[in-house]
Length: 98
Image 1 (cartoon, rainbow, N blue to C red):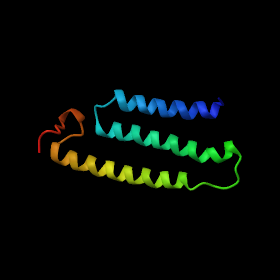
Image 2 (cartoon, one colour):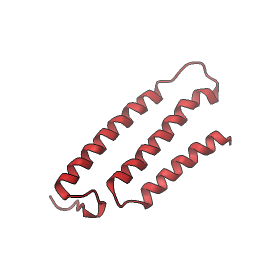
Image 3 (cartoon, rainbow, N blue to C red):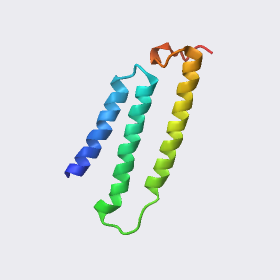
């Protein structure tokens, strides 16, 4: 395993652990999701270089597009939840209430 692979795996693992254990605010959960997507984007962008293929792949651009859509949706949910509940604390959200 090269140092490049180790850095991508560790960045993805640290963001997954941050998402699993640090769930007090919605914005911190969104930041962990974005860092996971960023590490996956960089890994997919470096994949043709590691395999030494000459054709560029469309998968990193598609993933970047979905990541931007996910960020926009997450920020819209953050604004809507802050307006209705008064804060972005995740323990204030009760999914059983309307």
